[in-house]
Length: 259
Ligand code: NDP
Ligand code: 8X3
Image (tube, rainbow, N blue to C red; front, side, top):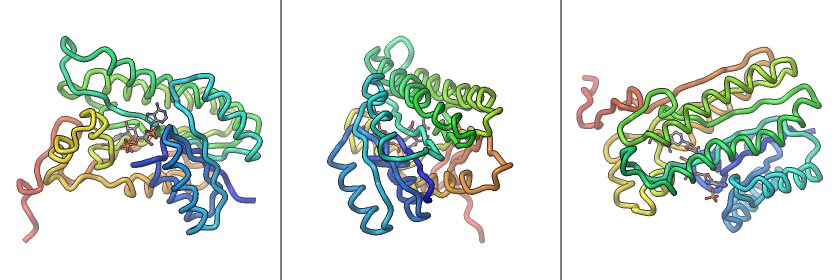
């Protein structure tokens, strides 16, 4: 019987790449997001290319009832969830604490913290019942070190770090692994969303930094998931070569190239 992975926020970026990486390994794939058409396209592509079963669930992680209904439906489609990747998330805006848009703050807190909790609360009991499973939370370097204007987004990712630690403790007796993957700058739709659809500004953010790709994070998720049963990566921070942490980065042009 094939193993099953549930990836939230799989309509683009990391989530989409993680779904594809695990489809390549023969997993049954459950993908979620709000954009139904994209989920349908990804399902068709993965089924065609890898011959795996793909289940799509269209819901907003901020809506507790939608999350409960979606996971209830999922239970009729798959027997067990081996891996949950809590990936759905976003930054909205970049402003000082005295000028930030409170609506942006609500969206980030509701998605990155409460959404992650709603999904986990539904899936963790399924894993507990089988005394096995792996929860991979996508944190961020923003959850290691706060950067200027990052305030609330950083706070949500600090919360993801705390919750990953908490999950590892609470689920320890049941053999359930909890891993935080903390990426630095990666060129996905992330900055387009952060800058409220300003694609030029988003492009400028990644100019000449050779940022991480979604596929890099997918390979890392696969690495964490494919280790022997007794080995659990607790947290893993990854940046591109021109970034040291969430505060310090340079441009490719500033890097001394090997002779
Ligand atoms: P993308 O914008 O490309 O993908 C975000 C995904 O999250 C989409 O599939 C989106 O789906 C989903 N999503 C957002 N809000 C909701 C919601 N309310 N309900 C359901 N799904 C939602 O960005 P990334 O792939 O870069 O981001 C993925 C995760 O990685 C996020 O948690 C982000 O904070 C984190 N991260 C990103 C980094 C980066 O530099 N790119 C670095 C470190 C961490 P849809 O819109 O269809 O609902
Ligand atoms: C996303 C990375 O540095 O853009 O979590 O906040 S950063």
